[in-house]
Amino acid sequence: MSTGVGMSSCCLSGKVHDGTPVGHIETIGGLETYISEPKDKARTKTIIFITDIFGWEFKNTRLLADNYAKAGFYVYIPDLHQGDSLPISFLQNVEPPLKDKETAGLVDTAKNTAVIGTTLPPWLLKHREGVTKPLVDGFINAVRMIPGTDKLGAIGFCWGGRYAILAAHGQSKDANGSSIGGVDAAYACHPSLVSIPADFEPVTKPLSLALGTKDSLLDEKSIGQIQDVMAKKTDVPHEIRIYEDQVHGFALRSDWSSEKDKEAMNTAEKQGLDWFNKFL
Image (cartoon, rainbow, N blue to C red; front, side):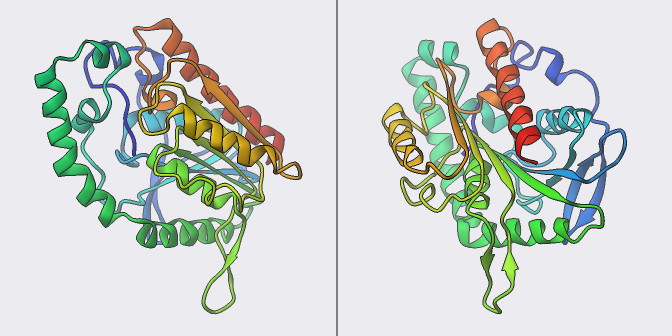
């Protein structure tokens, strides 16, 4: 489940939110898709963005995809919600900036809890694994069929972080015995709704994780359990970076009025770029 900052001017200030996304829209594998191309338009290093609950049109996500394209990656952001992403106004309800959460009164806290309770459960049910994973696998297969595509990675944020982890399980077989899904490397930023150890034990591809110590959807005990599981996978390249005092969603929507948060967001971006440069 994605969270992060609200849409106030201070929270949306900073260079990551400036400018206009430069990509274009195509239909890939039956899904509307934002595409950001590297200068040479080469598909030898391709990355699929698996978004948070706010979807493929969220400006921050597209601008980040453009940054990856500038670094030499061919990037796709599919509309895995099929037109049903949650509105950006929901950001403040799910998890406001840490400084706001710490000063919130009982009325504001109760209001946010009520909004979440009536909005999120039906949405998550509609976009459960049985619905979403086939879409992800199908999109991966469609991208692999595009001429020039070679190595393929997945980066996931919040709700989408879990599906990046699942993609790191490698290819599986469908009912007809055909290979589906699976990527060559994955990066998950503050994933939510993960099952520990079930989602991590089958990982066979290089996996990088960016986790925050103030993430209300993945507490420090859970982080420790993930570390224990991954430590046993000595044959699989992996890394787990812990970001102090970072809330859920920090890699995509940090509060840029805080230098610490701004640095964390920049570092998380570099973490992903370095990982994919190494394994794609």
